[in-house]
Length: 133
Figure 1 (cartoon, rainbow, N blue to C red):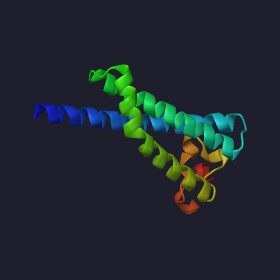
Figure 2 (figure 1 turned 135 degrees about the horizontal axis):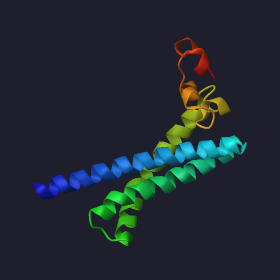
Figure 3 (figure 1 turned 120 degrees about the vertical axis):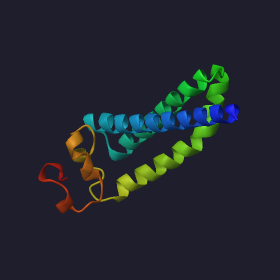
Figure 4 (figure 1 turned 180 degrees about the vertical axis):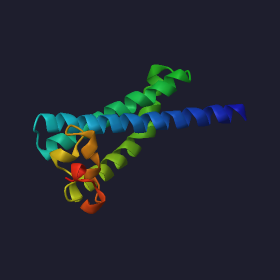
């Protein structure tokens, strides 16, 4: 039973690290694209690349801590997270492009953390004037 608990803990930890890494990469990509005035396509591309990079990178942490060799940990991370990251990125970017006002400089982290809610399709009456996008 202890082996199952240990494996479950390692799997949950790797998943949380991957999700955190993807979020870091996605937001960093939007910040970079917005800061440099890149097109939507270029910004999405850098965000996706960074999401994969940081997702895999942070996934490696618990895998290496559990005693896997680096080569084995990279193999596990690639096998376990590629489809998950790809699906998450497709859904995230389709929603971002499809939602009116979801892809404006005012809605990215580069503009202001206070304006972040303007990315969501809430009626503007639900947002304060400072977050209206």
